[in-house]
Length: 131
Length: 247
Image (tube, rainbow over all chains, first blue to last red; front, side):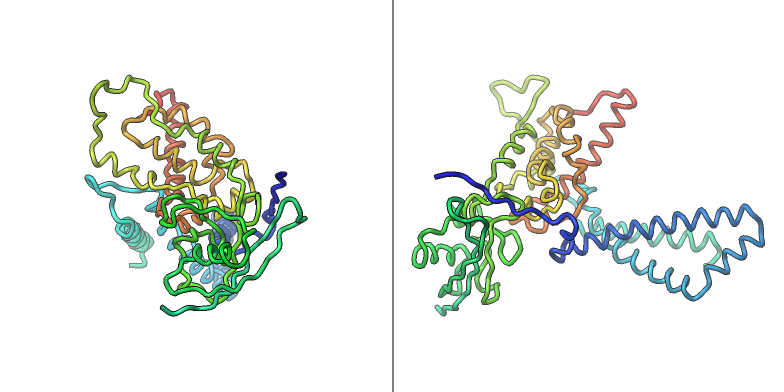
């Protein structure tokens, strides 16, 4: 009997479309594009700030146009689903905690992340004078 | 007990005759309490004796009956007919070369399991003529990683292994982590060069599919993320001139 193993190669360009698990992963990874966009936006904001009050006010006005408001709202929801919920869900895997002889439940660690997130958000809202 | 007719679509490949694998259909009268393995056994015993596949224990211990069931890597002894639609596609585990029909070549993973030094390494001598005591809390840290039965479903689910077969992969890395966090082991720095290498933990992009398909809840994805944290700490320690932490 001769051996002749058959290899079924994985498509390097469409593998992430294969199943739901891979698609959700790909959507999570796509958040890096939004992160990149916001990094550029921060650089533009800093430049506007450096150029003076007129430039800064023009930058603020540009962010209040309808397309930009729609984009920021989309980015907020997208980040919430695929960044916050997604990564918080995965946090207990990377950071397991032991309490004596038992592991702390994953749900407790995730809840802790949401609590810290809420506290930091409240602090920031207070810091910029919204509340 | 009632029976249900199941249409099985099984991937066939004869290395001596076939250029490429193809699907063959079988109609199997299944009983309600059958696992898919029972249906495959029915094919072998009643419809086609040439079908090749691996199985042994039929009780989730041996880890040899892993196959793709409707596109998902599963143990066929743990996947029940009652939970599946009337048409079921059965393929050999993905990401592995097909030896014949549903049998895959596992040589690569066997070599990787050995490469990660999956045994306790001591630098100080271990206690002689007495038990090597370990507190229960130390055991609980790594116990889940000892539950792996090497079914290789995780490798089949991992797209990174599919794209780069040199990646050491989920089960072997989880096994290395099991020894790294064992309080009796002192071989962490010895394994670091293998694990932190180009094809080690950093090839994992945390898809998490390995943990989702694991039939024994080993959670290899967790092990890999913890190893990334450990590896980074170790790298900084070495960079700053501190001695490496081996236990």
